[in-house]
Image 1 (cartoon, rainbow, N blue to C red):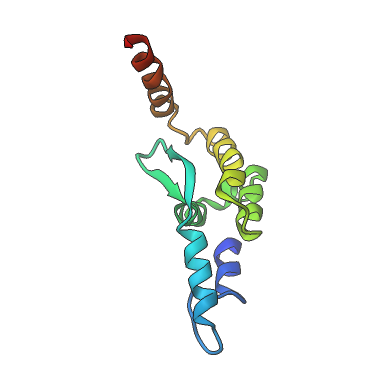
Image 2: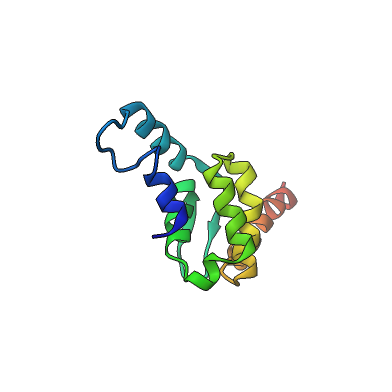
Length: 120
């Protein structure tokens, strides 16, 4: 099982079970539902919107990719409950290094405000 998922099933528990506080489960769920500062489209057609989406994405990575330094840093940030703003740059880097960040989508969004300003 992926270390990131194992950690969330560990003492903080996503699965509940004996002695699991509903408050702890709520906090874990609340953290995983945190929206990223910017949507990150992937080349496979997916879009990473929340920290929970990132956990699912990392969990599905091939072992070779998962063990890469960039993805390990993303996992460490999530396990330390870093803010979405702190995770975003490292996540973008990891996706970019794997060739999985859909750059065309980001460029189109970046150019749109400039065109709107030019028409005013």
